[in-house]
Image (tube, rainbow over the protein chains, first blue to last red):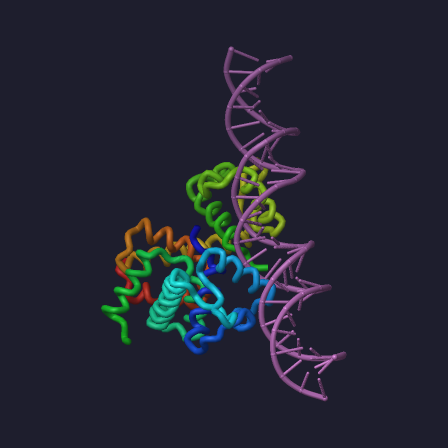
Length: 124
Length: 124
DNA sequence: TAGTATAGTTAGCATTGGCTAACTTGTCAA
DNA sequence: TTGACAAGTTAGCCAATGCTAACTATACTA
């Protein structure tokens, strides 16, 4: 079944944290998202059961190939949505916040249209 | 407390149905939203407890003043978002569907920016 | 080696918001 | 008047996803 908003947020967070450190732990994810340890623990269990994350030999959290595809998809939506909102004159903080919520709900069609628009008219 | 997506959808549906008929019943709302009678019954109970809807003397469902304000807010978001998505070249059906999901999640700031953009550059 | 701190897990609670089953209520026609 | 249908309600199930409390496990320090 398709991932819910919650699952997408966990994957995206793991992806982002992995950019700056190869040693991602549950506690780091919890801090980033503002959730408690048990919430993170259970969510990670679900993602692991779905084959989207795994633990490496040192016990650190890694995205599987499938997980990375989904994480990148969400992250790209996040960056593209933030950009188009900023093109509309919205401040970066608000744009990021809104992108973060919308990213889980737009269809592929709409996302592709926004991306194409940015490519054509975007200022960066 | 702020209304969830679900509550906003019910109010918006009541508002839309009220445009074409002054005799809105729970069953009509359920048909429109694709929900069963018990689901609608409970949701309407919550909205009534929150003072957002009431029943008129004939037992039909009406928005209270507070409910109408919220319904109109959501409905306006819906129409404005649909418009801007169509400006991006998205077909009406997809635009409506996506607007219907996004409308609950964008901030006032973002909504106002989109509305301003449409006013300036919109083709209708 | 014993005590403490950190990380993670388990158990169980609450809320939201769908659902089915089954009951009540009101209307209308035979 | 009775039977049937339509609308609404009540009770209770389920999944998702947050939480606290309390346990375990590991590792470092005195």
